[in-house]
Length: 269
Image (spheres, rainbow, N blue to C red):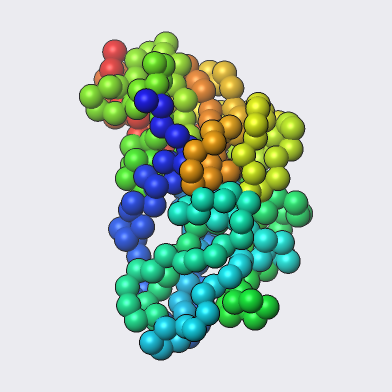
């Protein structure tokens, strides 16, 4: 069965604890806002970001976090939320009591200008409980991986809808679809928090390198899966595997002068 883009977020989220933020905090604060697939501070309009933050209320806050705003516009949950267009309504806890860092995953809004210092606020009702600045670019590519680490096995599939794994490696000349984020605008435009009902093609196609060889890209588009939780912000890039030796080959992509994380792809001759 084909991997639903919604499941990509669950795959990638499975390794959150592998690179945890500091174990304790001494104030209510945002620790980091990272590109969910690639890691690091570079995020894109409509990209998927992981927010690590401290809620320094003991033993627990009386009111849950209710929303995330980026320059006054709502960010949308992309993990463990059934309504793709609903604001954040809950947080994912990584320990107890409440001063242990928490993490949530959101899709950033895409109806705003790119900026190196966009404000990001966490709110309870109308009250801002933590804020920071976040780097927003037009492109901030990231490849989703099976283990949630930036350099792990890429989430990719091939006809007839099989995962590319050690037991089912890709072959030269085969068409493979790679799941990514941060590939910029599409036509038609799709607002953040929404999943396209049809084709939403990237206005700029990425370049994909497998084993440091350029792979011909056939199609780059936003996923149109209706899987739950939301697949909003997930791109599918289909390409032809170049002639390579057998083994785990590095795979990465470039777009708009930006380079993604380098994942791996199992290949056989």
